[in-house]
Amino acid sequence: MLRYLQTSAPSDFARLVDSVARQIVTTQHRPDGSFINTPLVYPNGSTVVVKIHQSGERYFVTDMGLGYQEADLMGASNIYSRHARLIAEAAGIKFDHQAFFVIEATREQLSGAVVTVANCSQEAVIVTAYRLSERRDADEAERLYERLIRVFSTNRVSKDAEVIGHSSTKWPVTTLVRPEKRGRVTVFEPVRKHHGSIAHVNMKFSDLRALEKPPNCVAVVQRKAEFGTWLGVLTLSANVIDDDVPNETFVRLAEAA
Amino acid sequence: MADHSTLYVADKRLPTAVGWIERESDYLELVSTVEIHHVAVQGLRLRLTARRSMPDEAVTCQLEYHERRKLGGAFSRVDWKPIHRHPNKRIGPPVLWNVWFNGTHHHEFHINWAYAASRVRRGDLPIAIGIPNEPQNFDELLAFLAKELRIDGLGSIPRPPWQAVLPLSA
Image 1 (cartoon, each protein chain N blue to C red):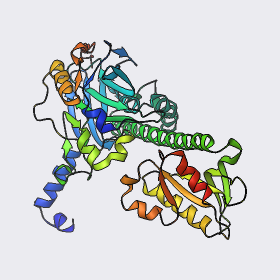
Image 2: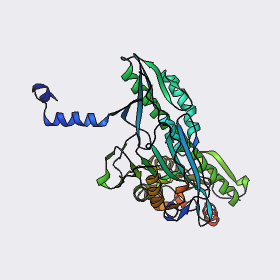
Image 3: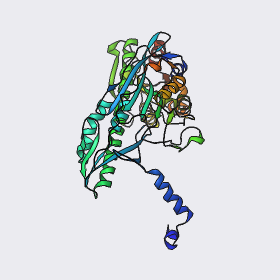
Image 4: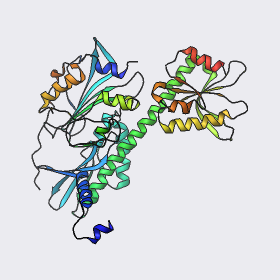
């Protein structure tokens, strides 16, 4: 950079960087308005596009509802609309049922308006994807619970229970099966193939297993085969089963406790 | 529980004729169930979206699967002449790393399944590839989809009710 500033002609490297910057943002001009294709991306990888329409000295800026469309393709347009309204409000822009927009930006405000609309649209889809992921997790927990109460009796199974670990940390556990007579409880915890999910469960189970009378810890995954080396990490602190194993496997694990 | 790869390669057909609906002011959508061996498969759907004001472009088509009582999503998606672009991440074969697609691209099932199966199950298709012979019109797009997705009866899908927008006075 210093060298570039010291010379009158830009270096090849500087020209390359300038060219990269130009490729990252592109524009397209049409009779009914112009598009700016931004480098921001929605969670699925599509870039955020903003449309600008001129009306005299004022400019109308909108995401054309492309964020809504991405959310709809995820099956979550309702979640999107709910959050988009709040995101627009916080940014001081408008949102109808579908699109983010700024009605009358001045020439001086235009670049800021484009950035605000693009970021709101992206943020709303990111929040939607996050909420959808939370719903998936809740569904997984519910499915596991329903499976367990079919295998064991309802009064032996607890959902969203709490177990205090060796460190005195209170750990929330998704499902817990109490022994029929004597013995230890068994914790069945759904785990996703995501380092965050694996690390969290591993930390929890390690603390529980350090207890004098530790619970039996079982990680329930969708497909063990897809976990690769992560499976080795999980088995450091738990037995691991696929969620579609026969009922007998659940019984065997609980009775082994 | 059907496997995504089994569903993808199976010969499929649309059981009934379906039409476009206008979801919001400019946003058009068509959703159809999909049949395999005379059974309309639970959770298997074909979804197309378009923009009323953008004739002959910006059509997205995806095949979705929601396993029984699970939230799934698209496991194959084609963006035909989109107004957005798609930059690949560094996932998949190195030849596709960080490639930008400025036009039609295909989030093809097999390549995403090979490199990111668990993401595919959640409707996330991070890898896109180009389409060598880009469909030039909507009928060619349907022909491409019929062959690629192995769905018979796509010819019954009507053209989106496009309406070109006249330029507004500045």
